[in-house]
Image 1 (cartoon, rainbow, N blue to C red):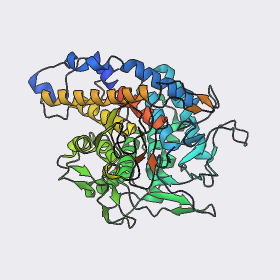
Image 2: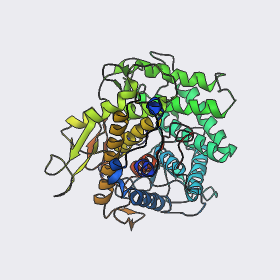
Image 3: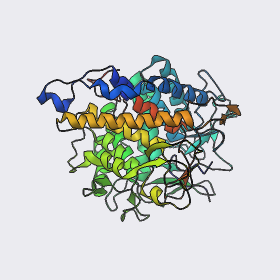
Image 4: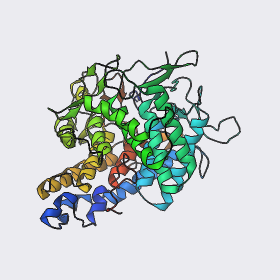
Amino acid sequence: MFPTLSRRRFFGLGSSAALLAGVSFTPAGARSAGAQSLPTGLLKDTENLPDSLNNAFVFTNLMMDAYATGLTVRLAQSYSDQALGATAFTYDNAVLIHAYLASEDPDNLPRAETLGRGLLYAQANNFPVADGRFAQAYFVNVANPDGSGAFITPAAYPFYFYTSAVGDQAWAGMALAQLFKRTGDHQYLMGAVKVANWIVTNAYSDTGAGGYSFGTNINPQNMSVPSTNGKSTEHNIDTFAFFTMLSTLSNEKAVNGSTWKSLANHALQFLRKVYNEAGPYFYTGTTSDGVTIATTPIPEDCQTWSYMALLHSGIDLPGHKKTIDWAIDNLSVTDTPPASGTSLTKQKQVHGLTFDTASLTTTSADPHAVWFEGTSHTAAALIARVLNGDLGGAFARLANDVQRTLRLLNDCVHGQKILGAGQTVNGKTIPAGLGLVAASSVLDTGFGYTYGPSLHIGATGWFLIAGHAGNPFQLGYRPASFTL
């Protein structure tokens, strides 16, 4: 059997604040009370954040340049060698494109475009089916023998990462859409439309609550077959955001004749059904039948991503702007020795969020392990809430969100400093203090796979997104009134 796991979900064992520090602005929700500036006293702990963000880019650049440099078409290795070798996950590379673009540093734009061309190459040459889809991952340590010079080949033995989950497709599409928004280069929009049409053709569902199904697998005969994994809330959040972007960028209709706006609303229809107002939180999705709601476990990303994706949508779900608070209140952890299963050594301690409610009760891993990607998701969502004025005009609530953001970013900075030393990429040691590991210790997601303490461009990319006040689910990353 080939793996059928979603996006980043197989890893074995193995400035918002900085920017806000120099900015005075009027939150939209506070205008009735008069203009107010962020109190600088809340920002005193962010003095190391600019250096940490710079170090994070040093790490992502090392991962991107491990086997080829310059404008060579390629993708970046996702993890240090200690995890899955020279494997580049589609989702991780989409996150890295967002990180480079959200920084608005002109020196980072060529890197974003190089990775974007890498996605376009992977899309056009995907094995075994090149019909607009992306595989879950690719190998990036050798040039393709087709003569293109691209360092992108199928992730075959021993992984066979050929699955095409809808979430991966939407993330690649969002990255290409943001590249088109920034550069005006139509090759990126064409690639985004291709993968969007693939989602419509292969995942549009009228069963149960509608929305979009999980995606496709490749069977042992190298034939594409539908996944039996049901429907994912996360995937539908991603698809809603992606198709909403296309409704702004493209006048073309989808392959089925529908508008991108109506297709985005089809994902929204599903999200309404998996929302639990009593939480408030979003369920993880459905069981394999695509109809029955799976009520456990409850993941972090569905709570924070839903907020970032649904901004400006006009959605009227009661309390949905507080799903971020549910995640913080229910999924915050501290990993410290001698906790059961911890990978931390004496005198090391880290804080942050874990993956989901199942992670807290595991008996096979560390129930206190910190998921740094999710910790950064949460920081980014809080920043988006501050910048968009979704706090009912109460300045005290704004200040509370800023304080929580700073704590989460500082948690990431601390993890960056003390974890991941001695790891390598292409056999070369990665200097300490640059990237973030996926998890502080082995973390059980409750879905049959784990994260571990390997340096990771996905976790580091999300830290960079949050550190630059970015929201990848919205074109342009930030409200027009906020500039870096």
